[in-house]
Amino acid sequence: MSLIRPITRRDIKGPALYGPIRDDYRHRVIALKRPRRVLIGDRVALVFENRHTLTLQIEEIIRVEGLTRDDQIQAEIDVYNEMMPNETSLSATLFVELPPDVDARAELDKLIGLDEHVVLHVGPHAIRAQFEPGRATTERIAAVQYTRYPLPAEARTALLAAGTKLVVEIDHPNYRHRVECSEEMRASLAGDYA
Image 1 (cartoon, rainbow, N blue to C red):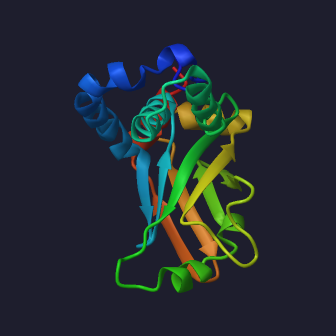
Image 2: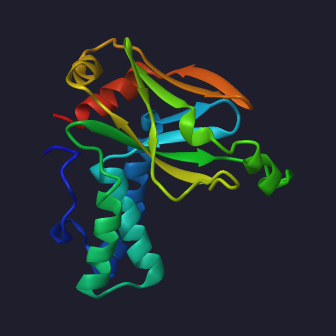
């Protein structure tokens, strides 16, 4: 089963069925996320999403908010399906992780414009992140951002090839970091297309 296929209502258990399996399911998805997470410098992390990671988020939102009606659940599914990677792109949630003892607003202000400075290198292919509109302006930036990385056919072929280097780069004037990702991450992302 492809892990980039959209989530449907049949995939969501809802509070009554999810509650008894929650701990086990969360542990399994958290383990799956480990190789899909990369820390870029000391403040920014990317977690590459797939069907499992997004299904967990939907189940958790439904549980926390006590949603039971099909229309409420479908609305959450629709939101998270927008973040689903697809045949022509990867997607990742970007987190700005700030220490508790700093002025969060001042530190976030230093990263305004970040949405123009994140690049995923898949072998020789440099893919600039596309950020979800509305989460950053010329005056503010949210600490959580949703990003998409268009994959031309050649880049997708490279992603699927064992040993292809994946590098995430941030070239923002106030935050410059470049990190080579693990082969385990490349293999996990490639596995989504199996």
